[in-house]
Image 1 (cartoon, rainbow, N blue to C red):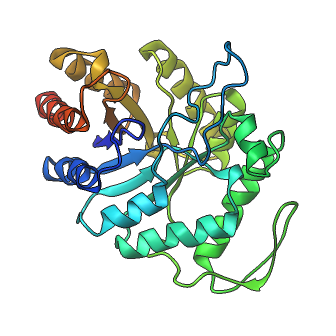
Image 2 (image 1 turned 45 degrees about the vertical axis):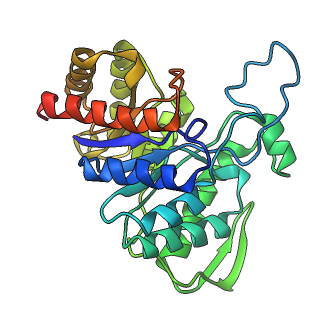
Length: 290
């Protein structure tokens, strides 16, 4: 298994030294990737009963800028969005930004994408919410075309590119594109066009069910289920040391190949406390011996 950390976006604060220390500590302890989720805009809750996960009071570092910064102060850590709400963004710009991170980090970029849930954020960014599923499929095609070719001609429903390209192009050809989400329509999409799955946080029973469905869909598209990577997140606040070890073993037995440890949402007293949790997670990884 590959082990990483889930960057505590909403709780790490804005001190650049702390942000750097978090990533450098993770790398020094032997973690292999840093995953971060994102929102461009936070909105005001439209009602008291709004069930959105985040609002305008939650802080989010912009992932491409963050990764560009951290690539200069780390050597081996892979950077992964988990996920970027791709249909809210201009596809050629995403191609350019991810290629730049890949170049500056010497091939350490992994792009995790999804369709998101916040309709008000979509509206504020001038993007249509209801077509986001179909649009992300075309975006993936456009990204791979721009990364892989000096000049691109593309005539799609949402993209029209005439003899244009990005420069520099990425070190990786192409940058891996993983997808998040767990709805059945999303699992079908992942099986068709993604390079990996970033799973939501599920119970072990839900993981077993969803992984079984994904493997079935992969076989339908003549793809090898055993070679398809699956990423899960484990929150350190949900388990003690032995519980973390047991969780790692259970996920491994289900076929999960990548795990990121997160510490957000646990009322930790300071950004430094999140760094300390990275050390706790490493001890559990070593005890799991996987």
